[in-house]
Structures are given as structure tokens and as C-alpha cells.
Length: 170
Image (cartoon, rainbow, N blue to C red; front, side, top):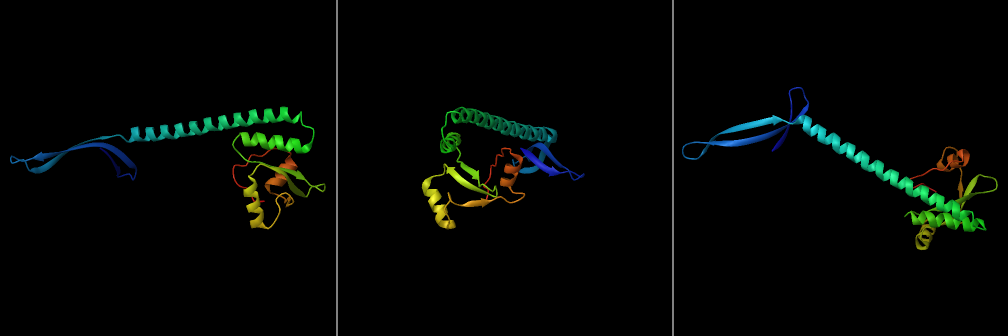
């Protein structure tokens, strides 16, 4: 049995303990013999190993996800070269993102570059209609202002892709 205790130095320690009752001549317990061995270093090593294994698992998942994104971007690039209109490009991008198991919205800048407008989305129609009803606006006509310091301004100014793994308020 493993037991955890706090040593005199205030540090948590672990021991492997075996305890056996001592019996009198009538078979009744009259004492206890205990043997213990400090296994603190082993427990700490196991905890560290578990942390390293978890970090490795997460890293491998991230590499696999990045690889899928790169393949999808390559496919999008090839497909976009054959598109005839901007709407076809938007649909190609959306379809590839859906193939990766995500949803996408394609935004374009207004002429004055002060707002974004949704040009294409892969979200389910019923979900969009419910969101529009709740917000009291049309998603495809809604203009999203570009505010200094927000994610949209960062993308437009830096002209760099940004992957956001969380909801962004429109």
C-alpha cells in the first residue's frame, strides 16, 4: 500500500508500506509490525513521465492537425486556380474547411476598409437563421466594424493568417 505524508521539512513524501498484525497466543491482535520504504523519487519520476507523455501526445496531435491544415491549404490553392468567380473561391475555401471538420465564414472588406461583410459561410442554414432571429440582424448583410486592437484589425493590418481556436464575438 502506498501512503502519502508530510515530512518534518514540510515536503510531501511517499512510502510503500506493509503492515502485519502481531497476534498473542490466543490469536488476538496485540500489536503491529510495519515495514516501509521511501518511494518518493519513484512517484515523482512517474508523475514527470506522465507529464512528458501528455506533452508529447499534445505535440503529436498538433503536428497532425497542422499537417491536415497544410494539405487542405494546398488543395484549396490548386482548386482556387481553376475558379472563375470570387463566389467559387469562397465556396472552395469553405468546402475544404468543412472537410477538415470545421466551419468557416469568408469575409470581405468594404471599399472603405472599415468593416467586414460575410460573403460565404458553411454553418448550417437553420443555425444561421436562429442566430439571425436572436440577434435581429441578417448575417450576410451585417457589417462587422474593424476596431483597432481586435482580431480582425490584426489580420487586415498584418496581412497574416490567424488561427483562432475559440469563439470570436462578431
